[in-house]
Structure formats: C-alpha cells, structure tokens
Length: 442
Figure 1: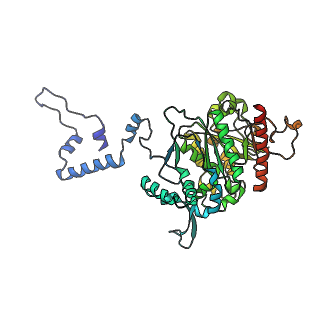
Figure 2: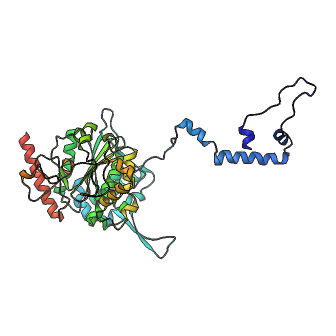
C-alpha cells in the first residue's frame, strides 16, 4: 500500500503506433480490478493509520521545531486558584504566628487515614491542604472566607495560611521585574514572634537595597508534600522544605532569573552586596568555582569538572569540611534549573530512609550518579555564601579558616544550634551586630 501511494505515479507514455497506449504494469491492473466490496475497508484502514497512528508525524515536527504546541497551565502546589499581587515582597503576616501556634498544625491541614486499593490491609496517613476543599468558583470561596473571618481572628489566620500558596507576583505598569528572588521558609513553632520579625525584616531590607524580590513561606505550609507531621520535628527531614519552597517561589515569580534560598537559621550581614555582581555574573563566578573539588570532601572519588564554565552553571552550593550543604544555595530559573529541583525533590528521594542528612545526602547522590546534573553544578567557598557561626573565633584565623563567620562576611548561618532557645540567642547576637554596624554607617 505504501509503495503505491508514496512512490511516483507511473503512467504509460503516449505511443503513436497502432498499439496505442502501453499496457499498465501489474500493480495498476490489480488496483483496477480491486473488488468494490473491499474498497470501503481500504478507506477505513487508511483513515485509522492517518488519524490514530499518525505515521507522518515527523513531517509536522519539521515545521514546529520539535516543540510542543500546548502546555497545561501552571498552578500552585496545593490549589488551582491564584491571587495576584503587585508587591515583590511576598511573605506571610508574621504577627499571626501566635494564632497559628494556638491553632496547631492539626487544624491547618486535613489528616486522613486511607487504605490502598491494591493492598487493603495497609493503612496510609494522608495530609491534605485545606485548599483542596475550596469552592471551584473563586468568588464564592472568597465570600465564604469573609464570613468565616468575621467570626474570629483564628479563622483569619487559618485562611491566610492556606491562601499564601496562591499568591503570584504580577508587576504594575511602571514596575520592573526583579531578576533575583530571596527565598526563606520560617517555622512559627521554632522562633518567637520577635525572632521571626527579625528574620523576615532582614530579607526585606536586603532585597529593598538591591532591587530584588522576597518570597517567604511558613514551614508548615509544606506538610501536604512531606505527608508527615513528624518530619518538621526531625532536623534533617525538615530540610526538604527548602526545595519545595524554591519550587513555589519559581511559580510565584515566573520571570525572575535567579532564586537564592537562605535558611531561617541565618542572616544577611552585609546589605550592600549585590549578589549578581558578587557571584552570579559570568566574570564573577568563573574564578570562584572550585574545579576538581571532591563532592564528599576531602578525598571523594567524584569531583566537579575541570573544564566547567560559569555560563553553564544552574546550581551554586557550598560545602562543610565533610559534606554538601544546602542552607544557602542559588538556582537559576530556566528549564535545567527547574529540572534539577524536580529531580532532587522527587518523593523517591524524600522517602528514602538511608539518607542521613536528608536533601544534602540526596543531592550528593545525584551529583555522584548523574553527570549531567554535576556538569551544571558548581561549589564555591563556604564563606562566600554561608559562613558558619562559631562560639570561639579570633580575627587571626580569618585568612585560614574557610568555614566560620568573621566580621565583614556576607552571610552568617547557625544551622547547628541545639535547640530553638539557643537558635534565638544566636539570632539576637548577630541581629544586634548588624544593627550596630548600620548605626555606625549612618
């Protein structure tokens, strides 16, 4: 069939001899004598191949460049509705933290026990966002929440909590879109209201100075993804929130170029540093990249690539003396950067029981076993992006110490603090230091 319809159409040439036209070849004779009763069946077969199997799809791809012509619309992590804002500083009402603690996480999400259809003897716990129970009509839902909010401040806090996932930035007519977004997740069960205020204000102050955007979420908003109430109580498990918060930020700021996540256990100590000029520009990043650096220091077998180029980097991270660290990291918002986050945040990694350091271990695994991701990732010195708090530190060690914070460093982090109370004291110490330096500058 394909030989007849796809090949050239051979016709007998005109002959002036007595014989007239040359005889048709055998194939034409067969077609001419094809039984009429089978003709309809042939048409059905052709239609089936053309519309369902589409054998000539590759021809169309030549004109479309091989790209899909239609994508499903993006949506928030827990809802199909969005709330537009023209403020590039997106953060929850921090003053509601005491109300959220009063409500507890049990009233901020829906907990269910279900059975697997394939294994009915196995029960599962499922955590669902309250957004799943919204009315499909946003206007009706807004009216419903207005009635609830009129009853108590607790209802206001609960509805604001669940709706924060829906907020999307859309600039006004005279606004410029921020290229860089500072991202942080904060835990209302860990820090006091005063501590939370200091953390959020620090991000807003820095972003305001540099013309960046801010995206801050509650840790507890990501419980539906973690699907476990205990994960936030486990130090290494709670780190997974960082990845999902970054993904949410990319949805809310779809046109931003870079996203910088800095954990709540950290402060930006030099508000004058332009992150783009300091690290992100090609000429800035090129000399900072640690090439042939062991992924697991100091002597790991897998190392960063010798010939890596700054313009190809999509993920920028640091290390401690023994492992990859993610309390401060930068991701580029393009298909490759987003794909790295998607791979990294896959439930297979999240639920794997043998990663001792949660997402840090998962990223280490990815970099060791997936060369393409490694080729898009660079490690820079810790003190450039994530200097660590140390109880005892002397200025004499500043030139040789590659990990600890010294006055003048860009960032300080204290991820190793033992308890919420201790974390708050460290926060207060550096906040006062930052306040004092700002006073001297003025």
